[in-house]
Image 1 (tube, rainbow, N blue to C red):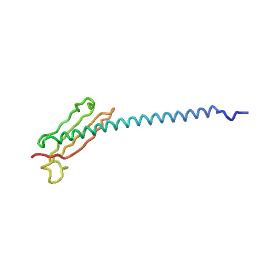
Image 2 (tube, one colour; image 1 turned 180 degrees about the vertical axis):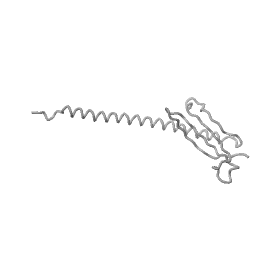
Image 3 (tube, rainbow, N blue to C red; image 1 turned 90 degrees about the vertical axis):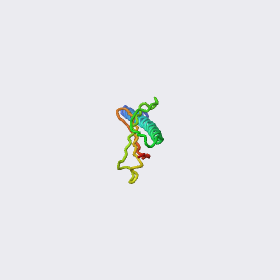
Image 4 (cartoon, one colour; image 1 turned 135 degrees about the horizontal axis):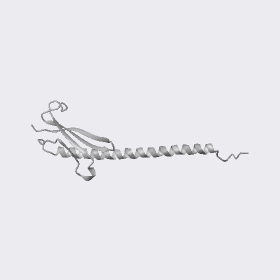
Length: 129
């Protein structure tokens, strides 16, 4: 009576539903992957800029103060901002070296949508008395 080779309407609708769920899940997964990749790229650029700024500060004379903040001047890095804070005589300097070292904190921040991201490094540099 019935053809055993054909699908019923319910089977066809169920198959379309399953395929729809798979397609939507795949698109969502790709969007998340793209966002994650973009954030990693931005973070890598920020780390590069952070390292570059730290090298620039390390090359300065020991008696020069380095406090300040600004946007990186290159057009491709214009969304990245750095802040340098010099802290002399704080408790984080190893005991006995407070007179010779200053603590320098370099932060690079950038916006990503509504969220502000940042990377930060803290190091010790020679300090003149």
